[in-house]
Length: 178
View 1 (cartoon, rainbow, N blue to C red):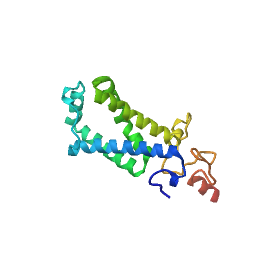
View 2 (cartoon, rainbow, N blue to C red):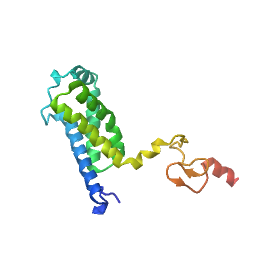
View 3 (tube, rainbow, N blue to C red):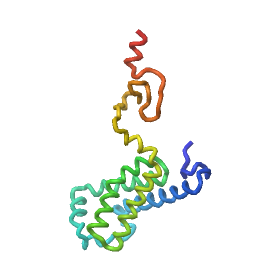
View 4 (cartoon, one colour):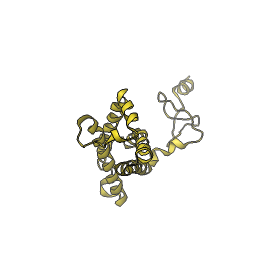
């Protein structure tokens, strides 16, 4: 059953509530940041004074900034609803790294010095909290498991979760039936 809050019905202890708070904070931040591009909810920083202004203007001129902000809105909604959280965190990481770099090393103004590291901190802590979903990506010698086949390797094992009974593929099943 889906746990809206992600706290296992309150049985998970204080860390679950800390992660819940961080997830909601990052979700609200992403949602407001994305929606602000479309609806001007919060006064923007003085970007025209920033050395990053030509970069941001170029992103907007070619239409990429629209898509970046749309992804931020989607990430915010997913994080707030506790849906596809690992995917949302990965989707937001390129934007997070860009914001961190621009705000920490290019702008280095007080508001930006807080925003960039905060965004990176929230994303990295949440990725660490959901690390079980990412650890299989660190497999050194991964076997391919295309989506059109059941996820089984030659030994009949699921490469992520372990043993699976049955044939490796439909071809093996047809050969054994003949």
